[in-house]
Every structure is written in structure tokens, then in C-alpha cells.
Image 1 (cartoon, one colour):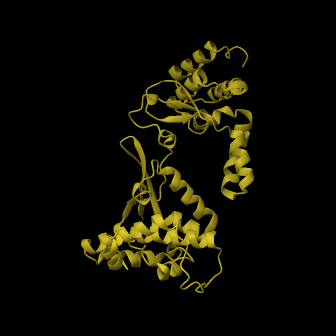
Image 2: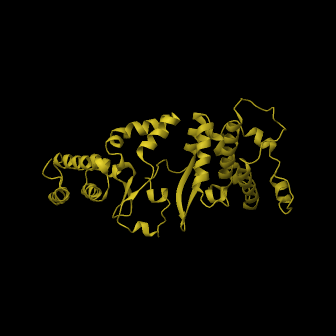
Length: 317
């Protein structure tokens, strides 16, 4: 199939690759649902010479780009060892093409998979939602467990590097990357809060609408905070060490890990963040944490008390 595809790429009128058989075989379940299969395929691909793997990789990437835009051919249509709907078959085939690409070449970037897209995170997010919604729970979990993902900057543009295996640790969220604020952006230098337009109430509505176990668990954990200080979730604060942190994150971090840095971040959040009706409650929680902390050093305590006094919260607590 790779040889046939290579022989026709020079023709402007060449038909797309005939992948009917491959599509029929790979549109049922993700290959990673059975762990040894991926290792076997990767070992098999490693036996090929680089000049043999390169055209195969190009072919698989081309098939991945077209999978959502080309219907399956009529041949082998009756091959259905199970009976998933067409969206599920699209999802399984796309997932398996990605897995085959990674078996052949170890890594691939989203900018290669979605060539020509001005921003690759959006089509990747759409693709991931398709997999999440259409694969079985076992298939979706095995895909996430098998494929590693690194969030990168390529100059001023975001990119994603995908691989197989590696560390099971998930890095902390970089909100600068999430919000598409490049390393050289002047927005990183401004010591002012960034208010995200998505209010926690809308996040809760979307989670409620989707009836997702994962989303419900996250919303359930955050409900006491988001209901009392909703703006703390969407108010983002630049930190001195180059991070962008939600005010809610700052407060929760202080309560579970009351380091001097955590106290100073919380005091700064109180000074900067427009938390509306939740501002006083944020100050109250900061003060309560300070009062109950026998290990806080005098310099840190004095700084927090001074901030509370400047904002008018020292006398009524």
C-alpha cells in the first residue's frame, strides 16, 4: 500500500490511497486495548530501514489527515465483528492510525497531523473528544495510558508532541500555554491579573449537561470554593517565578502546603484579584490559615498581616 501510494504522489489526479481493507480491520477497537500488540508492532517496525519507514510514516499521516473527510469504501463493509456505529468506527480507525504512526516513528507532532491548521490545539482537542465519546471506556483509557503527550512552544505557536511509553507523571498545567500566551509575550511581563471569560457557573453547566463521571468528580470537589468565591477560579495571577496561577489554586495550595512562598502568593492574590463578593472570604480564609499555623516564620506572618491591614481586613477578624 505504501509503495502504491508513493508511485502515485506525483500525479495531480491520483486517487487517494486504497485503505478499504486496513480501515475495515482497524475500525473496531484500538490496538492498545491489548498491550502486547503495540510492543510487537513497534519491534516489527524497528527492523525496517529508515528509508522504508519514512514513506510508510508519510502514508499513515496522510490517512490520518483524511480519515474524517473520507467515507469508508463499500468493499469489506460486511466485516463487522462487533456493531459500533459509524462515529465509533471513525474514532477507532483514527486512533489506530495514530498508534501505527508512533510504532513506525516513535514521535509525531500535532502540527504534522493537522498540517495547514493555524492553531493545532483546537483540532487535537476535537479529535480527543471524539475518542473520549466514541471509544469504549476500556479503549479510551488504554489510549490515554499508551500515548504520551508533551505541550510545546514552536516559536510563538503552540504544538503537541505525541509518543508511546515514557513517564506516567502528568506535568502541572501551564496556563500560559493553555491560554496561548507565548514566552516572549508582553502579557507575561505585566504584573496584573488576567480574567478568563469562562465563568465557573458556565463550567458547571457544561459539566452538568455532559453527565460525565470525570467532569462531575472535578466539579464536586470544587463546588464549595467555586460557589463561595466563583471568580477565584477564573482570575489568573502572574507569579514572580514565571507561573500563571488561578486565585483558587493559590488559596488551595496555601491550605495544603503553607510555605512562605504560598503565603506571599495568597497575599498578593488578595491585593490584585478582583474577587467581587468573595474578596472578604478570601481574606478570612488566609487569616484563619495564618492563625492556625504554628510553624509560620515571623517575617512571613508580619507581611500577611500588613497586607490584611492595608486592605482593611485586620481589625474585623
